[in-house]
Image (cartoon, rainbow, N blue to C red; front, side):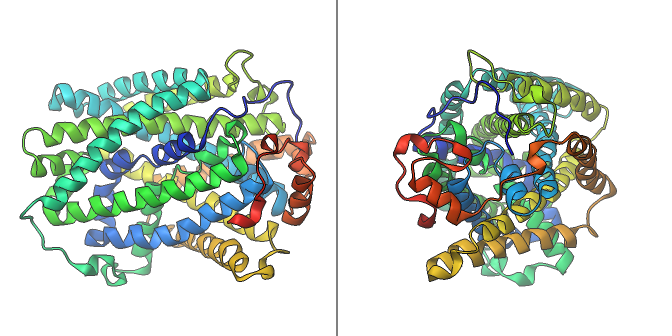
Length: 492
């Protein structure tokens, strides 16, 4: 299936703590809250905590699927490789393409707020200028592009600084919110119930938005070829990361419901955390949370660049996209051609966004479109895990639940949300989401006709992969993490 280049990505760069940091940063806690809370409230009202809860349960099923698949196929392409080798190469390519397209759209959806927040720290009036926000956001994007180009080690060091500061600020405000007295609305346990959704379509739309909150943890799988003991580390880091951000998201969403009125939430739009900060700590709180959101936004630009460039690297290596994308820089061990290609595409989108008008509308449509892409490729990964482990599922209750039923629940939920939400999204969001998937059919057809080995895959089966691992090498002949990993796939 794989046609390798002379050089690969640098192995054993990241440890367990580094990978957990990347998982948390990938979900971008502060950015997700500020960019998406008003969108979520506008869709489901006070049922935001319920949407986050009911999406988290199946999301953990997808995390388990990734953890198990990563134990039998260490691949920078992650779902692109797994789905292609278990379900069908066409679905595998579209799975990878969905991630690439969603991540590229996110470059703009994430960079625009970074520009706006930077300007807001200087003058709030400047922050409303979409063209200026796009220009400053593009500057942040280019800085992160250079960091990612410099290699995984530099990337992690930058991430530790940015995400560490962000977590300190958010942790302080969690404590302050719990201690704060008074509020616009009394806490209500019904916010966690299903009664808060006005329809099935409303629940599905809320689930897609919630999926956007969590999205990004799977960067750990895209970094697997650069991670020590990656068969264990990537999955463990993803589980810890999603658990952490789930608690953070629910806490802040409840705080917004309690401390701000419905009008304040809607009027705040993408500045909802700044408004919350002012409510908790007048004068200083808003600025501090703006800094946290700015750091989170820049940090998640970095992790998203990691995801898309590693995915493109795997596709170039397999000749399902131009082979040049699989080229690794001789000094930095990074897929530099993929980095440059993503940078060029994103800058073109910046120009389009600057001419599009309202920042809030751009964010709303982008979040919904990206949600469609996420639901699609996460859903396929859940099915792929069940297929890969099908001969092991009945060996124990643990295997059946963690390797079969839970990933299948996650997959079914994601694909259901994908279908159900089609009737409630805007034309722009549908055009971006579905049009982006359809666009992938072009390179799929071209490189399938050229005869890429990817389209004649070695089937991915857990029993065969575990037998190969027990003999000292991973699938496709890849060395098994220096021989240190003795637990293999049955641990999850």
